[in-house]
Amino acid sequence: MGRVSAAHKQRFHVEGRFTGFAAGRKSPFKYLCVETADGPREIELKKSLQLMFFQHLAVGDWVQIRGYQSLDAMTGLSRFKADEIVKLAQPATSSSPLPSAPPGLQTAKVLVCQKSACRQRGSQAVCQALAAALSQTGLDHVQIQPTGCMNRCKAGPNVVVMPDKASYSQACPEKMATLVSHHFATEQ
Image 1 (tube, rainbow, N blue to C red):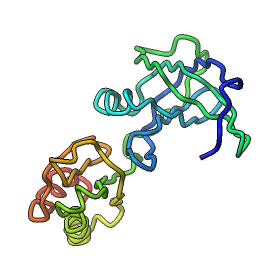
Image 2 (image 1 turned 180 degrees about the horizontal axis):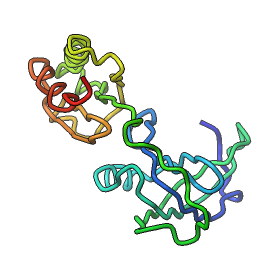
Image 3 (image 1 turned 90 degrees about the vertical axis):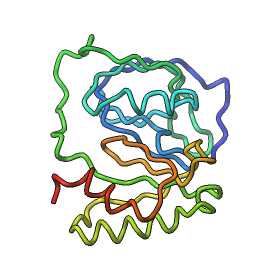
């Protein structure tokens, strides 16, 4: 991680269309992906915002984001960190509509926690059972993505199915075929 000087921080305010979340090292919801008038942006979320918004935002929602922009001294790139997010009914300042992504192009993936508590409770076997269930049903395009901690360690292994954002705790390998057929039955 690069060092960020406090003297280089300044406020930013941006509006755009929510396109999804991007995973960080420890959280599958670390970055908010937004299509703005200036192009796509990944904005880092404060920890308190990460789990708050993953259930309340849908792809295509308009959002207003405020936070701090800083310059990373190591890379020279701007970093954006949100401290306030407001869901909008429609864009307030945009004169030209942004292109909307068709709903069928959302990537289907299954996030599986791989931190120590979930691994001890069998997340590796869950990944193997998921891979087997997906290949048996011909859904090889669905990704299995290992993630960091999902903050429900005692209820592990934890699984999140995207783009449905369905969260499962105490996942066991025997139930993975049912989970795959429930969420991806229409894609076969």
